[in-house]
Length: 276
Ligand SMILES: [Zn+2]
Image 1 (cartoon, rainbow, N blue to C red):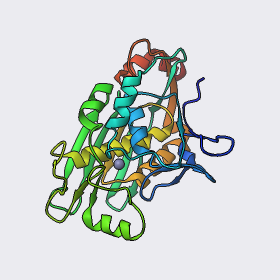
Image 2 (cartoon, rainbow, N blue to C red):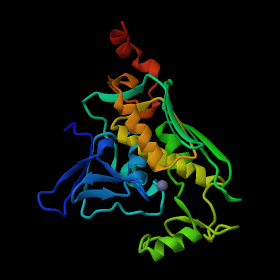
Image 3 (cartoon, rainbow, N blue to C red):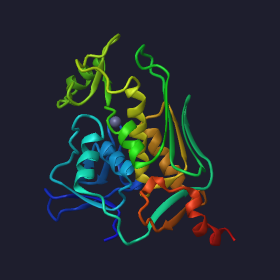
């Protein structure tokens, strides 16, 4: 079945489906939540990043509760299990969303932009007012291999003062050094240290990848995210989709090519007739 990415809440009556779609994002305050009414699924961003990073765009995901497990705070456990299970090329053509115009959203000095490009690329910059997390930039040209090697293992991070605050609000009760990098004013509290010297910006890139998965299709375009979070990334996704002239959906037979290895040049024969 060519249903795209769909969550199914197996613990609710009638087992409601929640498709991965930008218009079903209901909350982005701490994590990304999808759904309507009681049929919700939250903390989807790292799982979606893994799906996007591996080029999986057709999957039914059954879940027996309202929240995706945080695992180790990265996308690696999801990516690993899916690679182990095996990823199958299906008969239907893959439908790519090709960015045709530059689209930007801003919030003060923060911004997110999608521009036309030959491949899928993310350029991410962060600048927290913290000695360990200031001014990091990371750029990734996507292929399945680059995602697994460079980004999938980067963990979410938080500041000790915020963890204390969240606990007092009854949130982040499962949060610990096992599923996040935690920093105090000067140091990293995790005894094992960092997985990459710039793990923070790599994780923000991972988050952005999960957010743009809500476009509902693999993308060909260049995404620049500057000091953004889920809310601004989602706003960009909504703005891209709000005007059909911003993009074109192009079907392509994949043969044995993995999703993000495809270049715009490969799509040229498909794009040409509509451009004429
Ligand atoms: Zn994250």
